[in-house]
Length: 307
Image 1: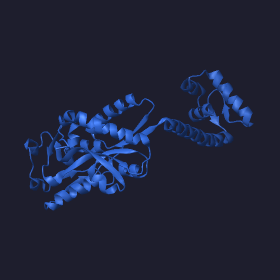
Image 2: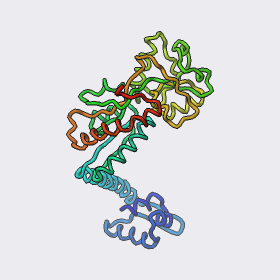
Image 3: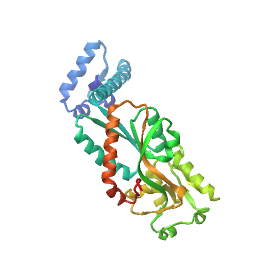
Image 4: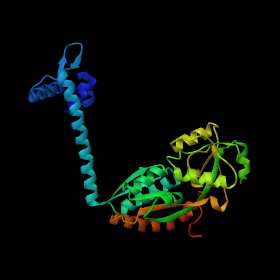
């Protein structure tokens, strides 16, 4: 059936055989055998072309459905096999500092627990909240700004964080070590979509509003990389967690906002009712790893949550 799908889509036996890594005669025999088994002609072929019969068109549509169901069943079977020996599903926001340390920590954990499967999923913060609430992930690495949308969750602080104003290195404000927010009145901003990162967007809006400033938001992309692109293109400034300064964007300058109400935490969170025993083993390991690695983490501009 898979052979027929490829031939029916390509309508070229030689290309289909090459794609499937089999000989053309073997492919032709396979299609002929299939036609014999089901009792209808699926393809008409001459020296110049291959075309599907009406029955062949119908069979292709049904074959695609069956093959998709078979692929989905195989994925579910593999997932069930993983769960039988233990698995953890981890979600994280697109923050370079999180990804780098999480890679190190999960690799170390797998060496200590080789029968454990760890699945990793990157989300923007709002979809990550949904995944946590729907049990699509066991543990989420995110910002404390999202906690108000995570009812019934435990969390632990990794590091303190703060808002930063992000701009090109050659922007007039880039020479400043601290920005007076009154200087930003009317300045164009590019912000990550409120649908993708509602907590950060609302937190930033409230922060500016408390100081009598209305943010002049010109664009709201759905992906962080698009935000970086637009800032580099000179469309405007943006507001991001200071921890994102660890990202590989040397053209950009992160100017910290030092006000007390601009501070929050980088955390990991999990559902109180999560009964996956590996989650609690992994959390205990994280407690150890974070304390052990705190000096290295501080080198990229964070502060110690124990302070």
